Image (cartoon, rainbow, N blue to C red; front, side, top):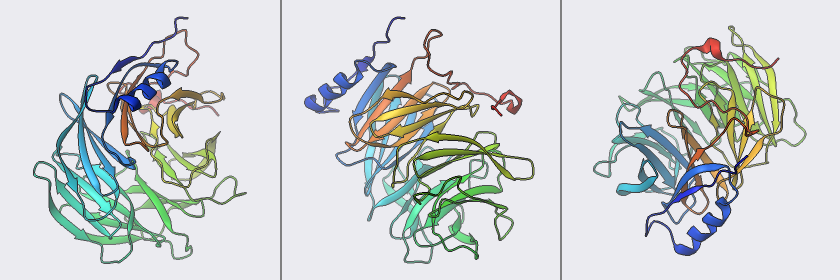
Length: 365
């Protein structure tokens, strides 16, 4: 088999020569067919979001208190628009799903802010009426006006109406006092969301009800660490959570009851992490320090490793239509990756195509 050779795209000025040379050396034996690098910031990239524009991908990138927008067109990644300087550290960022000029951020001052990126100004400041900091932000993919916000020190989720600027509901389990770390909305039901907590439990919520539908207990609690990453499969049939060096998956039946279905070993992490699930929900991309772990959930095999960066990564996001993966690392560098999986390559069959038929999804067991 011919080893894939990476095609490196570099624009003068977007990265220092010494740092670019290190990235080139890192790629020489990488299973990447083509990639680009962009030094977006001098600070670590903590979280980012992707907007699929007609002719290019737009990345909203948060590093400390600065929000930046990068445009990716083919192999060219460049910063567009001036950075937005927030008054304090940004904890979450998402594009407003129907407008590429508007980004929603949460910060440690307890505010959710609507940012007009065309003019680098704040269109609306939504106060959550608390001195606690916002630790996570998630917008419903089916109801674009509703966002869930996790507040540090609280065990519930605050629901925010982006359109009116109000916060109308708190989802909280009074029987449990462990704080909420992250949340995620179901892509299949506008009323269902999940939250991950510091005791490794996961709550499944119907926002029309005051108490959780189910509380998922961790499979192993030998060294208790909080949930660092949370994701729901594209059709809402599985929930995945990373904690305590394990990536666990639960199958959700029609009644919302969870059953443990997957367990994989992953690196220990105390920080909140972004990971990706393929369009059919059969494969996972998970950051492992400076590498990406390719996990094939249809086979009981060990994850494959792809060299991606020099710095530790906490952000991974993908455009499933163009098979493009974006990562952000501790050096403030964005890597644009297009994996190559030839038929003779033993890598798992990562299905990044658009699929709309949930009957195509097959899981072992």
